[in-house]
Image (cartoon, rainbow, N blue to C red; front, side, top):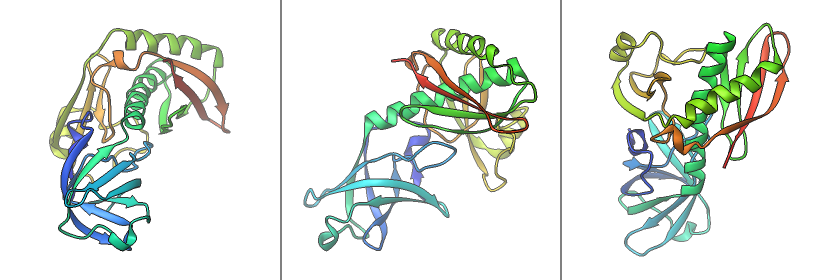
Length: 243
């Protein structure tokens, strides 16, 4: 299995690794990586791999996780001189993209926690984006006027400069320590045996594999930009970051 360097160090912008296998000259598995694979509503990282022996560069277009391996899809410009098993590479993360997603992800935890506590909603999903992100939730009485209040509560939390901590523990230990692993109504997959806990001090503590900032102050603030009724008790909220 690929060692996921981003788990405990989300601020790692570059790293060294060894190519373990390459499929179709496009899909590269490394022994270790700081590239985040698309998962949990968070898009994958982008960036590049540079072969140490000759400086050849390979753009990373998409990253996904398959059967424990984190696979990096690279462009096909250097197919004739492509990466091969055993090659030593340096990876470079597209930091602007990564950091934006980090801010969005931590902000999503904050506003989802507020909606759950203040409205009594069940969080059913989320999707991060660079310009806007969304939170899906189940709520029978959809009082749109209340969301200005929820936005204010979330921004008050963000302004308190709450530290964000990470812990990597076994699933059994996580289940013993936490009343629940996640705010998501669908729960956590049974296949996951090792859990990364994300704690926003004084706000929420839950299992999450995504990338986050170290302090809520880095989020700066959020603004709710759209509310949607998706039928029955299915609701959707879009928000953006205040830069």
